[in-house]
Amino acid sequence: MQTSIKWVDEAMFIGETDSGHAIVIDGPPEGGGRNMGARPMELLLLGMGGCTAYDVVHMLKKGRHQITACRVELSAERAQSVPKVFTRIHVLYKIRGRDLSDKAVQRAVQLTTEKYCSASIMLSKAVTISHDYEIVQDV
Image 1 (spheres, helix red, strand yellow):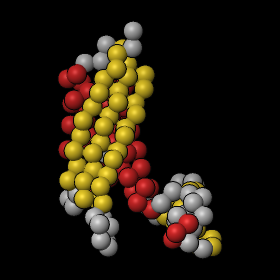
Image 2: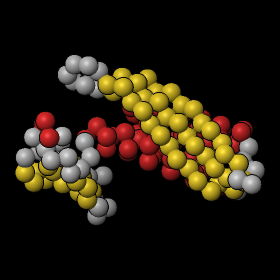
Image 3: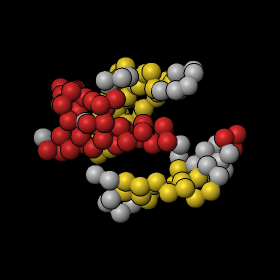
Image 4: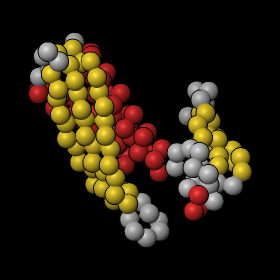
C-alpha cells in the first residue's frame, strides 16, 4: 500500500491513494489553514471507524442478518501536551435492521475488535479503546 501527500499552500495538502482517490487535508485558521479539509488526526479516527464499520456490516450480511443501517460514532480524547496523541477512543456502533439478535451484533463487534480491524487493533497497542453498541429494530 502506498499513498502520497502533496503540499498545496499554507496548511493545505492533497492526499492521494494508490487506489486512485484523493482527499483534502487542511489545518484550522489559527494554524495557518483555511479549514477546507479534514485534519490528519480526524482522518486517522475516520480510518479506524471505516475499517471496523466495514467488518461489522460484512459479518452481519454474511450471516444473513437483515441489517439496514450502520453508523459508527467515534469519540477520542487527546493528550494535552505535544505530541497530542489519542489517549482514549470510544466506539459506538448503531446497528439497524430486522430481527437483529443481540448475540450476532455482539459477536461481530467482538470479532472486528479482536481479530479483523487492522486499524483499531494497531491503535489499541497505544490507546485505550472501548466499544459499545445499540440495536434499533425495524418494524
